Image (cartoon, rainbow, N blue to C red; front, side):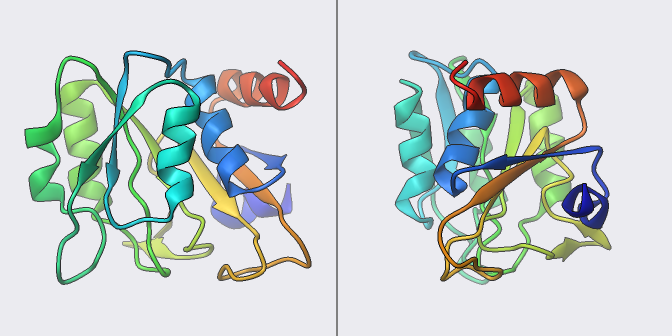
Length: 173
């Protein structure tokens, strides 16, 4: 509850780690075999693994050389009829261009799962990352911006239906 309040979201769900958070988010949104998910090529392998664990295909977009985050100008060229979601990764506490990403997602009817594993507390235009898209995913691995004594993760979400699906999936489905 405190973390949801900190991020200004309605709900927060604990997970085993950041990879679990990403996988649960994808599964809650019914991402599965045959689907494509756009991710940055400059990210930790967990982002791609979460996509492949659902049977979907990661589609890599190169980074903006200035920010090292996903280059929003290159996203649209990667969208196909199989594309279901975009996972922007807010790398090293530096937020992605969420205005542009949300605009693209809206125009193509795509889900947005924010990978905030390296950006806990970061803000984009005064709003916490993890609150723009459908779901925000976080990691508390000891080397992260806010590391724990072991592994851990969580998800932020505003939809009660999605929160309930994530809780059910987390608890063996």
